[in-house]
Image 1 (cartoon, helix red, strand yellow):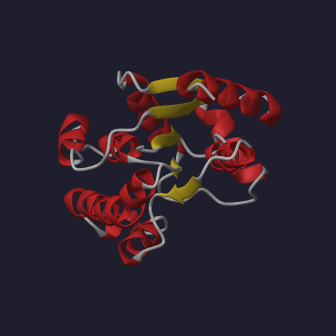
Image 2 (tube, rainbow, N blue to C red):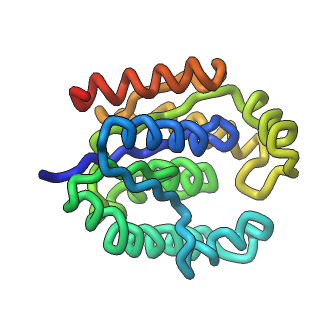
Length: 198
């Protein structure tokens, strides 16, 4: 029996990574096999992408986009598909929706990006975490104690958020991430349980 693919999406600072870990714990407690994964990956191409966080101008838009797609091809073949074949819940922190939103905000055509990613399995559920850009930036700076990287600048995040909001994929469920961690966790668990009859 094929597993289920859940993508965690949204602008930076919305708590996606934290909620992914909390959902993974819940699913394991229910006896489910779970793979926690992320994009960019920790593979060689993913590491090249992470280097862009502080020097994004080193590559053209097309070169940047191709890196994300190459990293995803490896991710799908080496991790996502094998786990789905084992019947696991695959929880990925970012997927091709992020590429469409972030590279789209830099000037790429989001529809073309979706076409280029047709090799990737379609998620059974996309949890799109929403929050104002002001709150997102505040969380990054105050909670993480980090300076904003090249993908997290406020004007860019605003464009990214608008693109995320424009996606009409029926798998997408919007989650208000500005609420408390526990309230968001309960919402995520409820959505997942309803979707997959857990």
